[in-house]
Length: 408
Length: 204
Image (cartoon, rainbow over all chains, first blue to last red):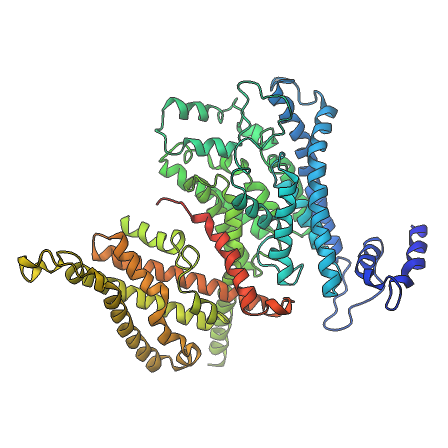
């Protein structure tokens, strides 16, 4: 620690105003504050003394994402070996543990590196030109983006999506804390709409050179379910697909809960995500209001569909419905984004409820988008300021009424 | 059920702003504050809710080929649909005059805030668009046409109020100088359009 501190103090004058490297001040500043508590204080406005600052908040969120990331890495390898037939579902999960991690890391690490590299690079350039300090916001977005990507995503495509999300989604609004829609979801949605062909089909697992064995399907649970729409209930095709969702099928409830299914890197395991969610709730960083109402909204819509029961997709058990796909991930990490969510407490409840509600609705109603969570959260991000506005307006009205009652 | 599906479609799936980008001029200009946006939004709902059924009657009993048979059976070959644009616009313009007078009388503050954009509803593309979509989609009854008009109006209202709330929220954001004002509003509209794409292709 001492050595780092000495080094920083030694090179610091070079970066300060008038120093020969002063144009790289933002880079230096961010690295310095990363290592040590900054010595400067707020120069104007209100002061709050608190041990938690933005950097620490962001670090907690990243910590919360680690279980999902580690599991996703393992699962990438697991699915790979399943697909080439090296192992079967009957083998213990510990079989070839390190080989799976190795394969997974080979695929996941480059994605993380590209996401951080491109995003932080753009952030540094903007900070340099616009003369503001580098914020830590992207540390979280840069980690969220890999978790919602398919394992086999081409890296250049990822780079384009990240660049779009950071520039159009965030920097044009003034950087961290100013964006109106979630940066990570912007990247995902951009990719989805700009490269629809590459973002559908057999990309959810790392295939490698070897062809997949017969009987292994790399499709996500939701992709399979979307295939049932428009086909007669009870036909052999539909029952074939639905048998995968029964107790001993590939997408059974326990498999989906532990995450042994194909899907985006971080979304498959509800268990790992809930672990992260527990960290967020315990530290008070994630809003319990949003998570709870999101969950209730999803379950409610699932139950309504159960009652309607028009096709096989609708008849999926609500609990099963919310542990497949990205619902859990969206609920814990995306919807709770403090910048883009509703800011008022009542607003958070409304925001979360409709987020969950629309997630399941879009998923079932819109066969073009088997994954409704991304779109639902984007939609609610757009609507959040309006919800807040009306919540505040109704608060004002209520208080006015109360005041009138008192004076009267 | 049919009415409900047309109504919901008009709000989300076939949203005037985000699906067809109609009525952008007043949408961009009057969305600085939520209050005026709500006022203009209601004016658009009102105008669409009235002009679409009136234009429907016009289409059904005057303009369509064979529509004039109720006067005399020998008129069954007359097709006046080449007049539809001018007739629709005339109806819309007169209704807008009416709205303007009502707003001026009962909500002078709103009248002042809306300024030139209230008379401009007459040439708001979403209003004429509503009439023309009604003609194109050939709704079987006047009830469905009315519901379609109201649904499109509510969709437009939702769009303008949502963007007005966002613009109020980002008022103190550190937006780059060249993008301040309209520039950032266009970008927001694009991003909102992306969010609304979640409803594209839904069949209700």
